[in-house]
Image (tube, rainbow, N blue to C red; front, side, top):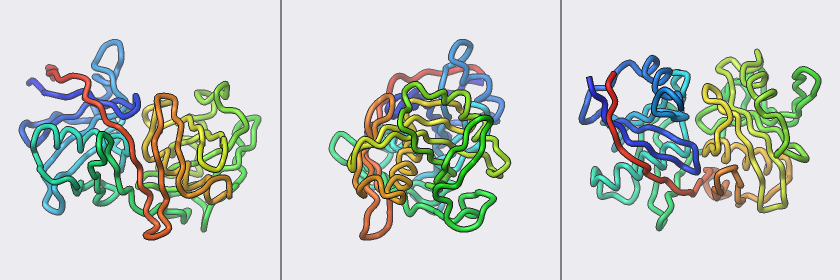
Length: 273
């Protein structure tokens, strides 16, 4: 069985996109574990699957490199929207995409794509975190360090940590320990953030099921929300990620978070499964 795919990325956060409208797809858990390998497979952080939808224009499913399914991916949905527009699957400038996090709406913004990511979730059990209420500056002990975490869901769960310096910080050491901590019943994505000023922050991301990635759309949104809640930044901010920038606006008008950034197609191919 041959599966056609398109390799895409949003700021280096890379994906394979498979169009399930036109072909059958194999069991994704096994497929992702095999083909996400960067030496023996295609290599990707997540797999995006495009389906028809009964409640929106299209439906997107997302699978991590380890085969686990996740609710939402900000960089991924921009790539999905570009795929749809580039292939003429819709002539609408605003799309409605069904995800496990709800219906998300990407919009053309010149050469970039803006996504209405919806309202952030700040209540512990709803994120989910095994704590009640808003979680801001909660001290979490990991090995030899205490981390003050602020937790946010942008359709998927995030723990945001503010540090004075992140470039040399051992993300690969602490990221998986926080991701798999018992405090987080569905595991968690972890952002390590340095505040530059009121309008700029630097972010490194440890994604559950994928490891450290070059960019994360929901992580950028969660970092901006957490930084604002802690009084560090304004509502409009540039988020600097290792592979580029995203513009994040937590709107006062509707409480929605708007993310604007690029999406790039790299190549298409097919693989035997």
